[in-house]
Image (cartoon, rainbow, N blue to C red):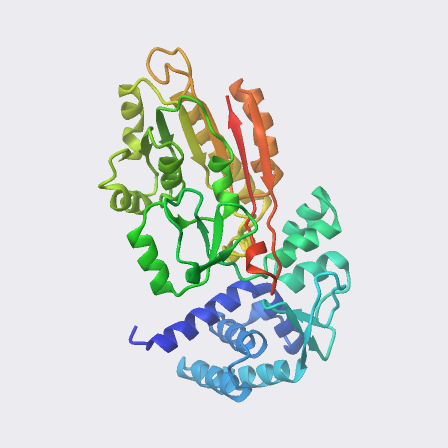
Length: 421
């Protein structure tokens, strides 16, 4: 694109800020507009969101620069008339801004408090967010109301608030050091609250160097590693990682079961290519095409363990995947549950007992998601018993931990896992 490294970093920061706080920014802009935000041209909406993010969320950009650059950009798109609107709206936004103040997670939210990712807040000079508790929490933390309502209905307002506030936190890079054959240099890490994990505090270049040199340490949140690390199956000789993705859990399986042969596959061509690159030289990991997995498992008379880390709503990792919150809906969840059930049916067949073709040894399935939603987790366990005639046990739901501006060692994602006999 011809951008300098500094400009690329700024562009990424702007994109990230807008995605993380899309609904919050829309509330602020709506307060400063004389017409509905959604009636504006897409290019005007885009520049207003970007300009408001610079003013409110990126404190190293001067106000005049943020406004002037926004105005000039929309003019270069051929809309001089829109330049006046952008100038007026962003100036109103800048005039709304008060002092940056400390914010405690225990404090009540207010209609004029704009929360920041460093644990502070901006006191706005007007009430921008709605007074009704559900909508106030949703707007303040940039979550769809439906998602906040789901959490509220399942638990309570306090839990919904904790989950929403967690999503504002800047996620840290966590290393799985459970299987490390030698210590990681102390200057690169700090202790995490979860045993067998450390927070990486070095540079990206140092991280790349570490991961290139060692195959016994990798980036993995403790809630992700718990699906495998907290369980030790007996007599596991063959394993199938049915939704291997980029291979994080495949790598963990290879360390956790050092004598097992592992088959890894993924339906997505790009992820499958990554698996082939990562494990091309591995003596115990075989990357198999999705279409050929039945033949591969049939050739070895089934597997002892099938891991299905299924596609999910990602509501346990919204701090890392902020865009996922805007996809959360009842329709999306129904589609995901159907896909998860189809994958589970295939997994059960691949390790089923006594059909003479597949899975003659009779194995177990480990089901994992990075969701905290009941239909994808606990209700899936009930479906397994009813529809597959299998027993689900050892259900583990881990809610996300950590707050904006909080300790790096206290951060973790959310996840769910269970074992299916």
